[in-house]
Amino acid sequence: MSEVANKSGSAGGAGDFLKVLGRADVLALAFGAMIGFGWIVLTGDFINAAGSVGAALAFVIGGVIIAFVGFTYAELVSAMPHAGGEHHYALRALGAHGAFVASWAMVLGYVSVVAFEAVAVPQTMLYLFPDMGAGHLWTVAGYDVQASLVALGVATAAVITWLNYVGIRPASVFQTIAVLFLLAAGAVMLLGAFVGGSVQNMEPMFTGGVSGVFVVLVAVPFLFVGFDVIPQSASEVKIPYRQVGVLLVVSVACAAGWYVLIMLTAGAGLNAEGLAGAELASADAMAAMWNSRAMGNVLVLGGIAGLLTSWNAFLIGGSRLLFAMAESRMIPRWFAKVHPKYRTPSNAVLFIGALSLLSPLFGEPMLGWLVNAGGMNIVIAYTVVTLCFLVLRRREPGMERPFRAPAGPFIGWTALLLSLGLLSLYLPGMPAALSWPWEWSMVGAWWLLGAVFMARMPRTAPGADAESRLIAAVEARERARGRR
Image 1 (tube, rainbow, N blue to C red):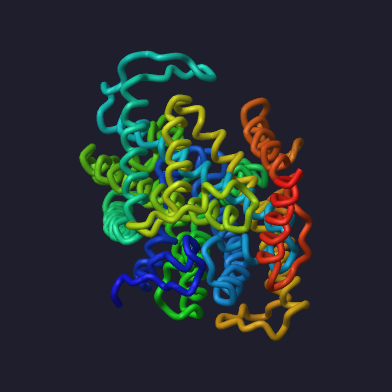
Image 2: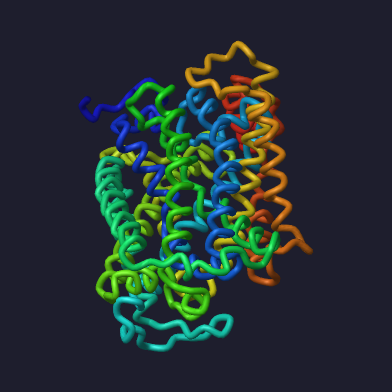
């Protein structure tokens, strides 16, 4: 199919996006988004906290939780295939304020992933080139920020931003190529487990008890976020919408399998003591299994591929979500601009890209802060979406749903309860509570800004025409202010 725009929408709106994403593109987009770089950076921490099998079990549990949420998304995206995903689901089910909460929470989740990758790129390159750190700038939380690492992170952020600015097709081609390289690196690591791995290295298979599993489980929202990029880019998909729902669920299963594989193979490559002292546990385990530093570097390159696929996908998803919010007049209309040539939400892309340029200035401590602050907000968005699923199943049973989640009410209620349970892990007193001041400050500042936007937004009841009513109310208010 040629890259032609569907002009059914309003000028400058989602109808001007190019419908170019096929099955492979959609699957690569979601899988690549979920398989970022956490499996390289955080594997040692996970295994030390829960043991190799305990960490794998946590990802199985987490995968089940996300799968339930994924089923609700799959049904909703097939029924409402619009750029912005959960923004439109919540508008129809909960009204304007519910939609803002879901969208604003997910935007922070997306931005946190993009910023995470901008910090992780230079940190990863240190593994390949240990002497590249130079030019001390300042110290953040005990970590010395180096000018050379900041420059690399900023330069990479500029390239990824440019790639997304010039079109969805270049970004999609890049995504597919990087995912294939990532899969090749994973296959080499799996083979290495049979060549040089040992079951004895996996002892103890469980450590830390329930608390250890919770430490891993709390990172699941951050590591699995990505399947929801499919709904964000639904206006650019050219396959039947039922298949979009199926691919969304398949992508979650693939990601869960990947993380389980990494926990077990890394555990087989290095014993607990080795993992505790490893700089990048997965890469060091790969090097140990093959008895070759070069093979460890291969896995790091695969990790960089995963990092870039995640970065690319979340810039796509976050920019479309900001676009949808601006189209509904929830945030400034500046974010709704569609580039006349490239057919991308150019201003939204530039905004998120600019934030990613800033994150390398904070150095390695930013990694942990972003995982937790972003993860909490992702779960908030998931909770709202599952609630939308239940509301629309009850209120609009006859709504066309090309993909219907099996045992709908059971799926919905289970997803809601599991999401609430996952959210509770971030609260004070829990094993993985957000830390003060950095993580809570990030979350608090974001929602303080969100409260300003919400206070200016007219209350709009839910319904199929909620967006048009919200736009009309905002424009009427603006006209009234102009007459004063």
